[in-house]
Every structure is written in C-alpha cells, then in structure tokens.
Image (cartoon, rainbow, N blue to C red; front, top):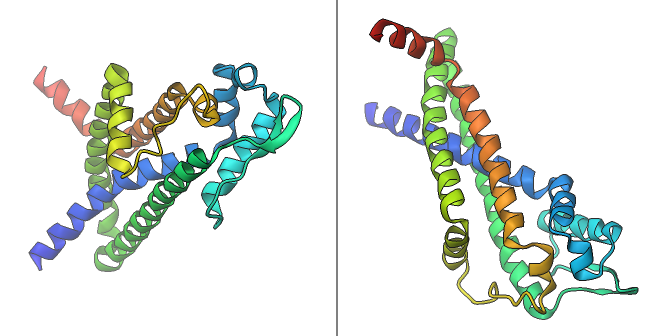
Length: 230
C-alpha cells in the first residue's frame, strides 16, 4: 500500500511539468499571434512573394491541419499573383510526420490532465479537508521540478539553439524529409529556425510563470527560514 502511494505521488509530480509544457506547446501551436508575429519579424512576405493577408490564411491552414483528421496538408494562397498550392511533395510528406508528432503531444497532454484530475479527486475522497494542504505541498514540489526543467531548456536554447534544434529533429524523425533546402523549399522560408526559437521562448516563459505560481505556497516558509538563517 505504501509503495502504491509513493508511486502515485511520484507520477502526479512528474505529470505536472508534462501537463504544463504540453499545454503551453498546444497553446503556442494554436496561437494566431505567433504566426503573424513570425511572418512580420522575419519579413516573410518580401522573401516569398506572398502578401501578408495570404500568409495569415496559410497560418490558419496549419492550425486547422494540426487539429483535424486530414492526412495531407494543402495550403493554397496567392503567390506572385498566382493562386496555387505552395508546398512540394517533400514538404507535404514532412508535415505528415510533424502532424503525427504534434497530435502525439496533444494526446500526452490529455492523458496527463486526466490523471491529474483523477488523482486530485481521489485525494479529496480519501483525505477530505486535509487534502488541500497536502495538495499544495505536492504542487509546490512539482513547481520546483518544472521550474528547474524549463530553466535548463531555456539556458540550453540561448547557448546553442541550433544544436538543440538539430538534435530534436534527429531524435523525432526517422527519415530525412526534414532536411529541406531554403533555396527552393518554401516551408523553411516561412518558418525559419528563429521562428521556432521564439516559440520555444514563449513556452519556456509561460511555463516558468506557471511554475512560480505553483511554488507560491512555499514562498512564505522559505522567506521565514532565510530570515532565521541571516
């Protein structure tokens, strides 16, 4: 029985960073502002010959694709005055792999959220009013773990995002479809590495803020200990 309690508590604490990070990733992927911000920052309209309103339409097509049941991405916009499908077969095939990965993340978020909800309800059933204090302690521990993880990722991103980005692709994909050519593959021009760095910083910043909120329960006791020490 003790082993089961320790196991469930451990899973709960680990599920907190998993849920927060996947939730923030899902938010960023579905945030229209990220796409318009990236298109403006990296001057995508001038580099592609696709006017900004058409780029906004393209961004919407990506968000819809990641959330629907369509296997193949089709983005038709006006480029240089011609209405056409702007991605080639290799780019489209790579996006199939990307969609599988992203929907896997969405599923992990749902499973983690389901476990967290069930665990919290079970705690109230077993411990009633005592559970609030116990839950606050567990959330604080999870907040510390989450904060440590995302700060580490943030630091690694600042130090060498290009190497981190490359490692991500090597680990995540078992083919070379992701090795696109920016001179002819529009996908890389519309979504350069800097775009993904910005998205990563949004995820890191949001998760850091949420982690700090989870740690608030512990802050008064930490401050009290510091005062006693000094």
